[in-house]
Length: 177
Ligand code: ZN
Image (cartoon, rainbow, N blue to C red; front, side):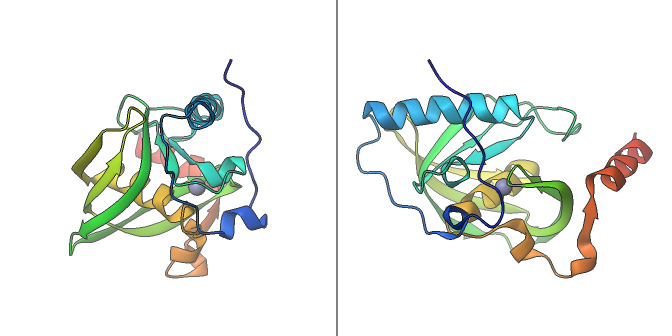
C-alpha cells in the first residue's frame, strides 16, 4: 500500500543535495517510492514532487499536472514519473510565472524559466524517452529538475520583490478569472 510521505521543508539539508542516479529502476523499493510520491503529490494539491522532497536523495520526480485549488489553470496530464532526467536543450525564450513549492509553503515566487526544453529521461517501466516540453509542463519540469540538483525556486528569482504570500496570490487568481 502506498503511503503519504512527509514533505521536507526549506532548510532541511536533503533539499540542498545533488540526488543520486538510479541504477535499477525496476527494483521494488524504487517502484514503491514512486507510488508513494504519486499519492503524496495528489494528497497535497501539488503539480509535481521530487524524491528529495520526501527525504530520498534520488533522481526521480513526478509530474502530476491537473487543475486544483493551488493551480487552477494547470493542464490535465496523467501523473508521470521522470527518472534520471537530463535537459539536453533549452529555448532562447524565457518567461516568468508564479510558482509555489510543497517544501516552501504559503509563498509564491515569480520565476523565470525557459519556455521550451528538450529532455531525456527514463520511465518507471525502464523505457528511455526524449521529448520537448513547453510552457506549463516545461516550467514544472525545470522546477522539479532543480530539486534534484539542490536548487529551490527562490534561488532562481531575479528580485526578492518577486516573492508574495499565498493570500495575495489567491487575490491575483481571483482577478484573472
Ligand atoms: Zn518544489
